[in-house]
Image 1: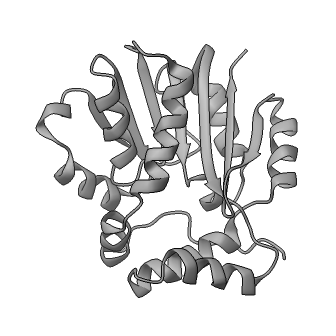
Image 2: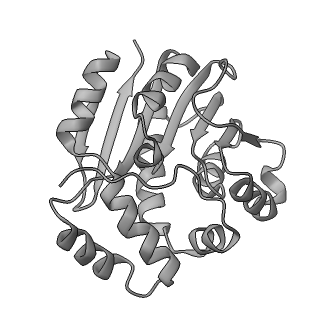
Amino acid sequence: MDRKLEPELMEDPEQVKAYAEADFSESHHYFVTQVCHDVGLDFSGKALDLGCGPGDISFRFARKFPKCRVDALDGSRAMLKYGENLIPNTLLKRVNFVHAKLPLPSPLESYDVIFSNSLLHHLPDPQVLWNTIKQCVREGGNITVMDLLRPVNEETAQKLVEKYANDESDILKHDFYHSLLAAFTLDEINFQLAMAELNFEVQQVSDRHVLIKGRMT
C-alpha cells in the first residue's frame, strides 16, 4: 500500500481536544522508559521534544529528571496552548513550549537528548526530521524516535483502529486511521537513515509502532 499523506499540523480545536484527552498512557510510558534507559540516572542537561503536542511526554521526562530542562516544540499553536493549560506548576520553570515548524531556520541550541513521538508520519519529507536532529544534537547526544508503521493495506489499518481506538471519539478514530496510512514502513525508515548518514537502530516494537534509537557520533 502506498503512503497517503495527512495534514502536517493538528490545529482544529476539536481535533486537538480529542488528541489531548485520549488515553496514550501505555505508549507514552513505554516511550519515556526507552528514552530514560539511555540517558542514565542523573541526567541534568537539555532535552528537545520534537512534535510535543500537548506536552505529556515532555512532562513525564521532566519529572524523571528534576535537574533537566526540556524545550517542547510543536508547529501547532492550538496544541501548545492546550499544553500550557495542562503543565503542572512544578514544571513551569523547566519545560519551555516552543512554537516552530520544521525545518528550523537555525538551530535552537545544542541538546544532550532529543526525542520525538508520532511526528515522523506527519511530515511530507521525512528528511526534515533527521536533518533537524543532526542540526540540534550535540556530539554524543542520545536520540529516541517512535512512530507508527504503515500496515500492508487499508483493511489492516481499520482493524488496528478497531483494536486500539474502539472506545475513543470518532475524531480520534479518523485521525488514527489516516495516520496509519501516512506512516512509513521499516524499509523506508532504514532507507531514510542511510540517506541521512545516521547509524541508528530500527526495531518494530508492536503491531503498529517502530522505535528508532541512536547516539550522535
